[in-house]
Image (cartoon, rainbow, N blue to C red; front, side):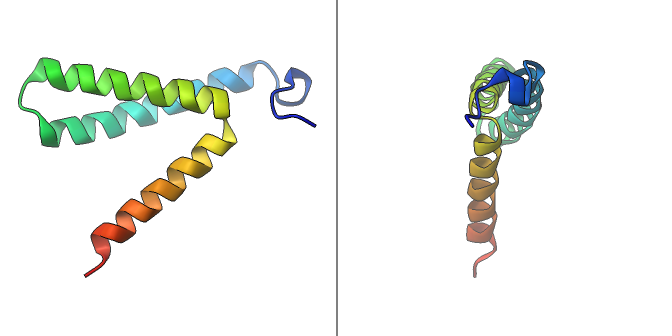
Length: 83
């Protein structure tokens, strides 16, 4: 059974994952852009690009995308916690 079959996951599955990725991507993009840039227009651009790229990735790859993101975040936070 393939993950892309609409009769299994439904056509709304893409949009649910897309919106989740859009919100999460905007949060992550704003967090990093606030720390890197002083200009509001650059922050807005960086936030929009990260939100849209993460939204399309999550919409297309669905559950695999969230596993990849959680693994990346876990590695990143463990790196910061290490002495």
